[in-house]
Amino acid sequence: MSIIACILPASSLEDQARLAFQDRHDDIRIEVGLMEEGIRQAEKLAGEGFEVFISRGRTAFLIKNANPEWSVVEIPFTVLDVFQTIKRAKLHGKNIGVIAFAPMISGLDYFNTMMGSSIRFYPLRNENEIEPKVRAAIADKVDIIVGGAITGSVANRHNIPFAVIENSLESMRQSAQEAKNIAMAKHREKTKGNLFKAVIDYAYDGIISVDDKGLINIFNPVAERVTRIPASKAIGHSIQEVWPDLEVHRALCSTKEDLAQLLNINNEQVVCNKVSICVDNKIVGVVINFQDVTKLQQMEAKVRRRLFSTGHVAGMCFDDIIGTSDQLKKSVSLARDFALTESAILILGETGTGKEVFAQSIHNGSDRSQGPFVALNCAALPEQILESELFGYVGGAFTGASQKGKAGLFEVAHGGTLFLDEIGELTTMTQGKLLRVLQEKQVMRLGSDRVTPIDVRIIAATNRPLKRLVNEKKFRADLYYRLNVLQLRLYPLRERNEDVIALARFFLDKYAAKMNRKLKFTPTALKELTRHNWPGNIRELQNVVERILATLKGPKIDTEIVRAHLEDQFESEIHMQLRSAEMEDIRRALVLSRGKHSEAAKILGISRSTLWRRLKRMNV
Image (cartoon, rainbow, N blue to C red; front, side):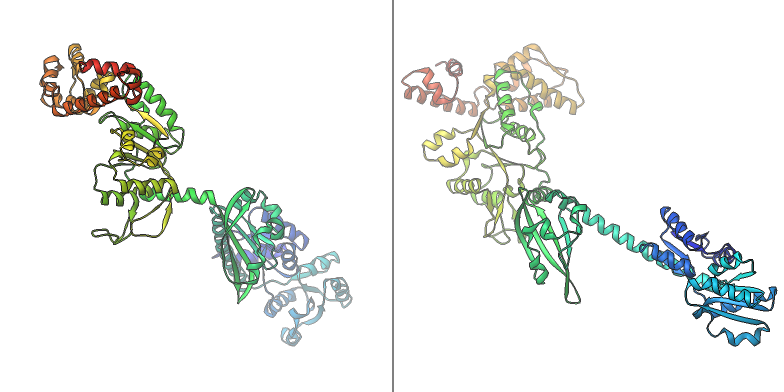
């Protein structure tokens, strides 16, 4: 849509304008309106979206002054335009009166003899002289009056022939092109303005701009939210009234940047920067930008997650935990409660009881579920490598280190959860460094002197008796109590036989689906599985089911098949070691308690009934 309109003071000029615009400027709208009527036409067109107006004479002047935001292009009069109009007026008579402003008719008296007519010139100094000049021309018995549209309206009232001065086609085309140039420039400026406004309005920063007197001229939505002052009540007011603590007068007196000022406004901590605006080495204003410290921390956490969280995702949740035993329900219920807190958690359980599954479920049930879940087996790496994995390192920190350096798992887990499995395997030195990170909530990379703040929840797990290791001075007591804020105990599979069947069916369905087979256990086969001691717990059961499927030919899994895959498990070395260690623990507890089962159970951290079952199973 064109935003250009041509408002002519007389309808007799319309044909001339259409002829001038017909080739390259036919999108320009043409309307008629003289003086005040021209202003009304401009107001109406502006309401429709027109921004550039072409007009002439007094009408152009009035439109320009009616609204400073309108762009007005005035069609120029030339001596040639007046000369051509006088030639046309000769058709009405030889006595011609030219009434026009002095600059328009200056020098035309030299053409009197050339035109073969009697021409009288009545120069005007202002509009008030038009009426008396027309009367004077009538008194001089002119046959026709030549002049502008305003003169024509007066001549018409006196019923004297009148010829309006027409602009040349070239003058009108030049005006149209100038209007097009202005429209294009306005479009560019509007585009820049909208871009600038979008940047200001949608910036994360609060942005305020003031002029050299300290009066606010920009106040974006973030500034409105933080100060709780609408822009309409801030713009045009002194920044000293709106936000006195900013001390903008310093920036207005110096070109030196004032950065990272920490301020409090409406109980929000903000970091503020003030930068002077200079034009020709003169300060003409100041731009203030500020950010909520909390938002900065959230953005930092988001950036860290985006940079480091690839692959660090918890895939399990509480609904994925298989089993119906009371012990399992108790563990799940407790874990759900723990997930709602921010405290450190220590998960105790034998190998294969699903400690990481619970850790992932706690993470996904917490407010940190959108953050990374980072897992590390502390027993899997040597001490030097373990430290570099946990804390990171700078380039060249040690032999073989990457020159680019590397972020440690604490940094990677920022905003999320760090799961440390086999925590009891940490060396004393690494325990001390870990304790410092947990206390200070900041980490220092190996080879660096710079600390990085972290926000990480720790979930630790172990299959070793940490309390005993503390008593034996093999594990730091201060770290133990830092980790053991909330304690979650996972029961071994041999103490919850009712879960064996559910787990066996789950693993069977899972692996059979991958092999595109339909299989099932016979009732006796399931019963046989429940008789097994499962020293390797869930992981061992999963392995047994996978082994059965690898060799099974028929559609059913019977007792003989189960026994064939279990018979080497009953007296396996691992089982014997576990059983021997368990018996030794029970023996020590009974010695310490002088044979009292209830006290021995407390020492072992189990119930009296569980102790009784273990003694019965071991034939003690």
